[in-house]
Length: 158
Image (tube, rainbow, N blue to C red):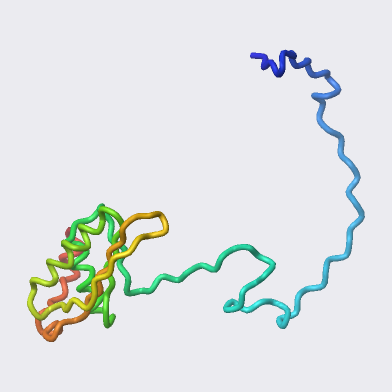
């Protein structure tokens, strides 16, 4: 179909215009710039003013981002595994509707007496204007006595 632009019909291409372009001679090689010395390269901890890219934030290993895709029981078990794995505290955080899943997982853990201790509960707004709930959990006084890690064979069957 033909496209009309401002009332004009585009002209048909001539055979000369549709022919493959001929090769143009390559420009003369320019010498490569000298390689940077290690003293000139910016360190990872320093900001590089030449790039506009923001630094990548590294998420702490003890933070669990909760979503609506999984049940509160899953996140409660995951928090227990984090604590059993050596973390001193675990942070459950959820945005928007996922805050209800954070509350559910926290309630499951809180009802298991002396297993988990609730350290802090914080609310805030995210950059996108969504509500954010953060619950900080730590090992209870009898965590090591009461926590029974799941068997490896049982995980593979599920």
